[in-house]
Image 1: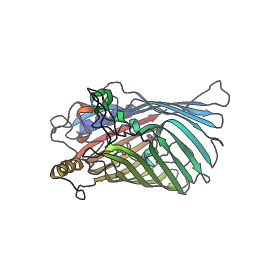
Image 2: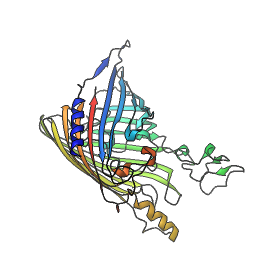
Image 3: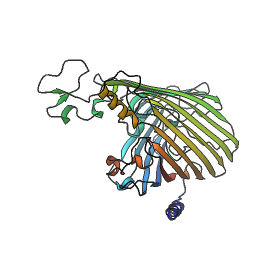
Image 4: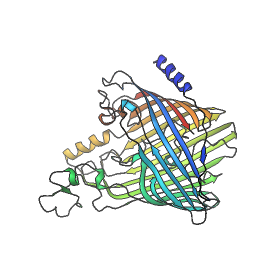
Length: 439
């Protein structure tokens, strides 16, 4: 294991290119074009991650490979297009997966600069889940994003994006930031066994209505039978200082002035999911967060971020419960030690009126939804957030994006023997080397 870690560090040091930004001149008066490339290489060692469930697994892959083009058109329009090829080579899977991850046009009727700006965005947008999920992937306290503390059941949203129309901007001289609107959300296509995928073809009908005329049959797993849209919004209150004025937030600032902000968000879609008994349920997620950046000088800063989630996705669901995380990092010059704890606790079945069989189904569902995850590491900055290396130790108990329990037949072709998401299985340790370069 020690030899492997030394090899990972040596490889990481050889991969340290310079980071810079590229502005491309274009023959359109008042228009700008910026082109960026982001590459994040990861080396991941997971305890008990081999198929036998006792040996470690070793992976080197490209977590993110992104091509970004963005700019402005006059003083009233902005645009962004981003292509991503996520997790390329993870678990030895080199299948094509590049997608259009972001694609939107924003119109600011009163201008794109100043202390009060209102954008109307349309296209493929980031879902405003929380402050943390609106941060740049180049600038977290930890190596990667937190996704275990909130739940989209059978998540159909690639990269946590969705098509929609939203309002975005900042008010009161950048003391309030906001974004929110109406989005496509869950749709019948997100579930298997509907429409043309069944023989004979099935029909998505609302619960309690008459079945379709033969030979068609009612789709047993159909969601959103009335095609209600999804509504989501986020508001950020900058109590001390300000972090508004851009598309994304970030953890480290390299500034001189302290920043304290609190944010709240909410997401709702009717009849969007199914509970453990197969009945329609509404999607509901709410969050509250606090962000603190306390610089001593430009050479040192303390960063603390905490977010809590309420997840209501139907009774007896492993995606219904309460979650939170707390991150803390302290940067001194080019290095930042950090620690993180995240938690999710599913609502149990004790308050529900169920038959014996239904209670067994419910208990089985909620047993595999809990999380207790700890991370600690060092972040080495070579060019601020444009070029940095995370070395991170992780203890993963229950549901986790890391650890042997994150290995599935779908993403790796096997499941480590004896490893599940249940808290009755011991915590699984892992080590991550994460190199981010943006140029």
